[in-house]
Length: 215
Image 1: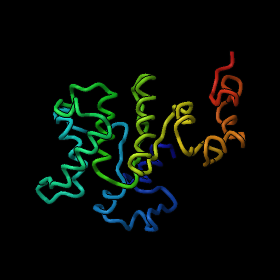
Image 2: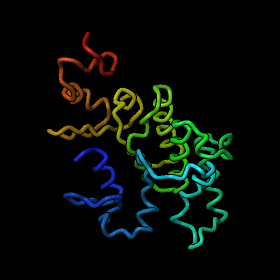
Image 3: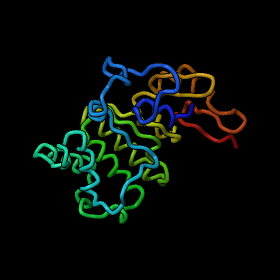
């Protein structure tokens, strides 16, 4: 099972292959779709979205678990949408169509949609895919900022492990042989990181707290 399969299973997007998942002391399979949508919001790598929507319209879709059957936005819904736009700093883009956005801007809009959904847990799969180094750092730093400002838990999968070491409170390191969970410092002290990659090419440098290429 890969990381994307794991995240999709944790969020209820696909059936669990094995084992049991519980959230808020309730089995995931016992949660109604409405309760699940008010508990977990998801940002996947290849989500089908209409890029003809405006930024504000796409973010407003995050309020679907709370709107009535015709999708009328209440005062509270509009407040949550406005809060998400402000938190992610999208005021200058809110009137643009999504097809006008760069990959980095669109990713910010998808994060804002998850915030508008107002769930205690947000799950993202490779949120920095297709982004250059600057925007990779920007998105991950934004996620770190949002955990502080909104008190939400954010779980994401990434291959940008050097950035994750600098910005994440806890890491889940998964290989085919083991799973380790801990703070970056705890994992470094246990020498977990030094065993992730074949040592003939890449090594973990404790001094700089980063992976380096052997030269």
